[in-house]
Length: 287
Ligand code: AMP
Image (cartoon, rainbow, N blue to C red; front, top):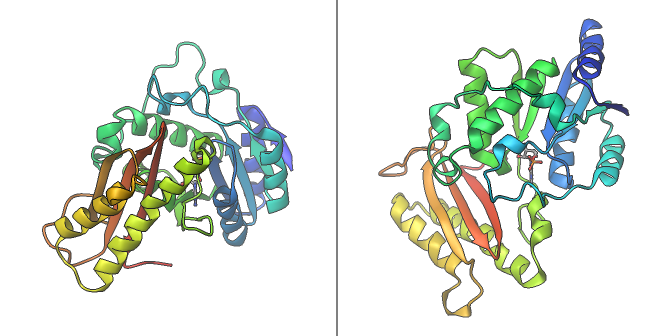
């Protein structure tokens, strides 16, 4: 596996493959890789002739006071995992290469970025859209792979690519979970054992939402109440510490619906200890 550090190196490498007629999948990550990230590389390997991962902890998508400084960094294990998954190369840029002095341009994110995460992390999607567009320019891939774990992010990137005519195909991949249901996340490392067990409330609340949808419930308010009661944990004191949102919205626009009649997505953001966790479930399931 090639380790590429400069824009010139990664562009030349990927363009060399494209010139030979090969398809190339790119998998953007912030490192601290787990099986969820590696599932994206596996999907890329299935779809494309070659795969290139990126590892870059993007400072512009973190607000002051968020976890930029303590974000986990596990480079050696990451490189081993990527090599074992068959990635042809990994792009590991330094922050000053991506944001040189004088840098001042950014992407205005699409409408779908305004709700949910956009309400709680107002600058976040501008940072995400900008780094992803920059990576798409630096890495002339045919396909890009993103997890449904970050469901709103996937919708933001799809909209940006469509609105700005970026010549790349976006592929969304299913959420990978631990056996007990917790969605894998680099931030799960922050959880102590009792927090980790309370973190299970997120997937349990989504299970509750899914079973209500399966039995024909069409009122999103009822499903939201049920999700909140699972998240709170009743009298057990085994709930999450606070809920940013627990909601059922249109799967594409992420706007509220009065009555559920088509595809929807249940989305949760909640705090457990000092860790903020997100999870979601599409209905009907696509996988
Ligand atoms: P991150 O390193 O957190 O920025 O994530 C990089 C990519 O991995 C994003 O497309 C995420 O949606 C995806 N990802 C993170 N966790 C999971 C998971 N549990 N299952 C599937 N994809 C994931």
